[in-house]
Every structure is written in C-alpha cells, then in structure tokens.
Length: 328
Ligand code: ATP
Image (cartoon, rainbow, N blue to C red; front, side):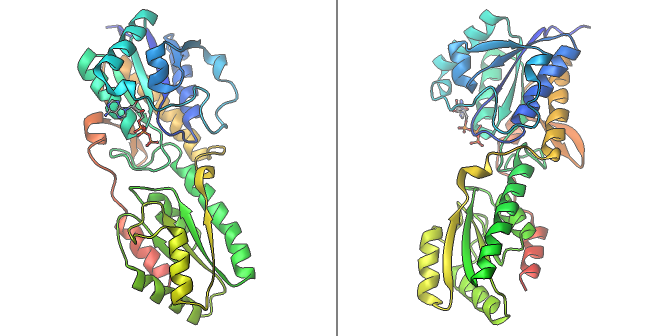
C-alpha cells in the first residue's frame, strides 16, 4: 500500500552540531528521490509554532554537506514545552499540509517530539545531532566525530607551546554530563590526565600524577577537563590549586568553548548524516514513528525515542583503562 505521507517537514533543534546540514541535505534529497514534498522548518520548535516554513527541493541543499552549523537555524523554545504551544505547532503543520517530521537534535528535542507524537498521533522520526555523543541507541551522534577531531587538533597546538616552555595546561572541553569528548580526545591527543563527570579521581591523585609526570622527564603536561568534572573545581581553580601545591609547575588554562561545535564536518559525520537521513525518511514512509535512527556495529538501527532519552550513554571502561596505561 502506498504511504499516506506526502509531505515531510525537517528541522534542527537544540545545540547545533557539525553534520546537521549534511542530514538536512539527505532528508531533502531522499524526499526528492521518492517524490515526496519536503518543507524546511526554521528555528526548530519556535519556527514550527510561528509557521516559519520553506519548501525545499534537491537544489535547495547544494553545497551544504561540507558546512558546519545549520542552514535551518536552531533554537530553544520554551513555549513548545507547554500543551498550548504544541497545539499551535500542530495547527501550523496541518495548515501547511505536513504529514510527518524529522527532527535533528538532542535529548530535549526528542522528548518534545515524543510528546508531540503521543498527543497528536503525528508521525515523527529523530536523527541524533549533538556533539556530546550522549544518546542511548547509537554509538555515534552527528557532530561528535568532528568535535573530537577539533579538540585533538587544538590540543596538538597547545602541546607545541606547552613543550617549548615546559608548561602544564588545563584544557577545558565540552561535556557537562558525559565525558566522551574529554576521554576520546584526551587519549587521541596523549593527555597526561583526563577529568570527566563519570568519575572523581580526587585532587590528590591529580597531584601525584603530575609529580610522576615531572619526575619521569616529560617536558609538558596536558590535563583535559570536561566541563562537568567532579573535582568540584573549574579549570581556573584547578590552576590555582596546582600552583599552590606544586610550585614547580608553570600552569596555563585554555577553554576551548564554542569552537568545538563549529567547523566542517569530518567525512565520517557527512557519511553518517547521509545514511541517517535516508533511513529516517524511508522509515516514516514504511509507517514507523516515534523512533530515533542510530548506528550500532556499522549498521543503522531504530530505537524507540522513549528508550533513547531514558539515560545518557555510559563511559567506555576499556578506554578509561587504556588512558591510564598510556599516561605511564
Ligand atoms: P543539546 O543536546 O545540544 O542540548 P537538545 O535537543 O537536548 O540539544 P534542548 O535545549 O534540551 O536541546 O531542547 C531543545 C528544545 O526541545 C527545547 O527548547 C524545547 O523546545 C524542546 N524540549 C526540550 N525538552 C522538552 C520537553 N520535556 N517537552 C517538550 N519540549 C521539550
């Protein structure tokens, strides 16, 4: 039986991440390929409530696969958290003749989509777009691979100057609730210590490790600190603490900040986005709804949104061990 879905909306929501444009392009082109209309919804749920729509065809998404950010813009929208707000959004979609939507975003955006599906029986499909890699049901979220490569590149540069002056650098990276960026980029950049939200190694252990590092003849030290690390001190307080307790060290701080969200997506993110976009549209046309497209063991899989948003992904214990061994 032919699908009842003739027009699909696509939007990006929450924090932007590299690869979102590649996913938009994929959704639009898959719709064009399958002769389904596609509508871009600007500024996430805010634009949905305001009816900020634009029809997109295959040519509307030329030359965006390589671009960071999102051509559809992203926004946070308090009104969508209310039943009245979602009703307004629903009325706008119906007015425009949109039969289903693909949301590219993180946990919060998925939560909103799930409620929307439950309240209006409206077909929704999620594509995980966040640099944090914190969503259950997928080994990779869009933008994560780009972000860890950005961090590694930045830390390599910091290492050059750290080595030249025998300095210790605390480098703060994104990750309030999860330490995937810190751990993976830390191992990739050869950091001496990695502080993540999932474990509190304690300040004593940090001092011991830095002492050992100095004694072993290392000319520089890099400590990667996730925003949500559990030492109870931010990077600037850590700098003061180490200066007080280990005056042998000349300490500097670098907060990488929003640069981690930007930049051209890596090939991995572009390919993943392309695959996820196709899967999202095809799944909607097969009558599936309220799922997130993810990747596990190189295969695309669907996970109910309700399961995807239940908790954050856990830190990789094996990589933690590797990190410990590498800092010897
Ligand atoms: P990131 O991981 O980058 O923060 P996110 O999708 O989790 O992305 P949020 O700011 O949490 O970002 O959510 C984006 C938008 O989704 C919110 O501004 C709001 O409009 C909607 N949203 C979030 N949580 C809910 C909820 N519980 N109910 C309804 N809508 C929600």
